[in-house]
Length: 346
Image (cartoon, rainbow, N blue to C red):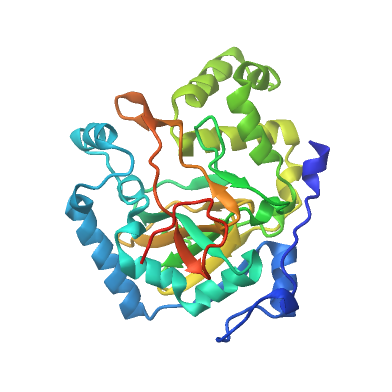
């Protein structure tokens, strides 16, 4: 694990980027900033009115049940709807494949050219999601990810080239409402992509649950409580579990190495950051302020996207094993010359 404490990041040089037309490609100073911090400061990509219109479109789609399309399958959707627990975070997964305005959003030069500066001349979005943080919603615990194994047996992203772990996936997170500390804004540990031990422990704990929990300084009651979450909890619950237990193993100094950045953003602003950078969010402690955002998970087209095999969904009626959908990716910048993935034809 010592090798995971000082991971390098290799981004294209300014001269290696095929800039073509447009003025949003990153210059040397911005590339160096990303190499050090693993994120780019928020930048404007939509007007407040445009952001509100997109938010309203998604909420209408959600109210209409996304016209019967669920990428988690009918069984899971029916269970959750029956219990009144089918949030937009689940229902809206991959829905940008149906909603062209969101594909167009990621292709705006402000986003696409920045991503191309970091990932190269062929950028795909492999998954899209919406996040709707209502008043009373709890905080999201610190977490990091690179290959997106989640609760499945295999990683969902497989680089075919020697790729910096921090560049396997970049998140383009667009605020569709104002995002404040009060309503649950994002938090980031700049530079924490250099230490991937929490990500490693997430995989290790799933492969070797007994060994992992035996390593922890836990009481017997704690052991059974944490083991239950590890076996049956949601992805969010498991992420929280791994973070809390990893700190027991790694020590509090793991967090002390990095300074916390709170990212309050205006509606229409975008944040690009490495998924391997530790990130979290505040709880929504407001009375009536909703935080709504769109997320495009992006990578290079030389990365194999493998949404296949089986995964586990922590439904209201217990864990449900489901077959991962063979969904398309879509081009954000350039054209696909590798042919590893299904690319949406437009």
